[in-house]
Length: 174
Image (cartoon, rainbow, N blue to C red; front, side):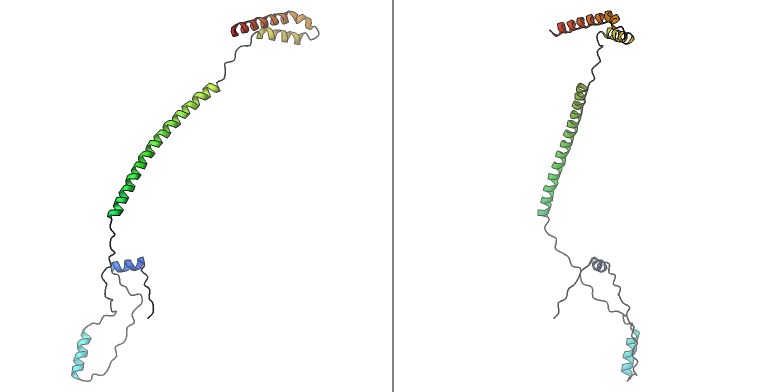
């Protein structure tokens, strides 16, 4: 004989589960053959048959539902429980690591701020010693370009101031 295959689709399963058995094609109605009655017994039989309505489509017999065996769940449930416990432990470890990360990030940020403040702190400018004497002799030279010797007193005063400042620095350094 020939090989036959049956394809079970979700649509077929739904149709069988809901019991909707709609014919896909229209059923052709056949005209009853009229034959002349032969005798009274045949007429009575034909009359009884005419009273009983004949079904238009013969309905297929419904098969009992097919139940798949349920596999044992004890092994699967113990494995599932072990996976769930490992998952919970992993979530706890993740929370701990996230808290530690947050603390470390905060600590590193604070240290970076401290280093930035210490390293890049702009020193307060110290006044230049003898700046007034320095400005005075420069101005004198600009005004007396033809007679620079007239600024010799201002230059001497600046020189004396610079010498005193140098002595102060050398005595502080010792």
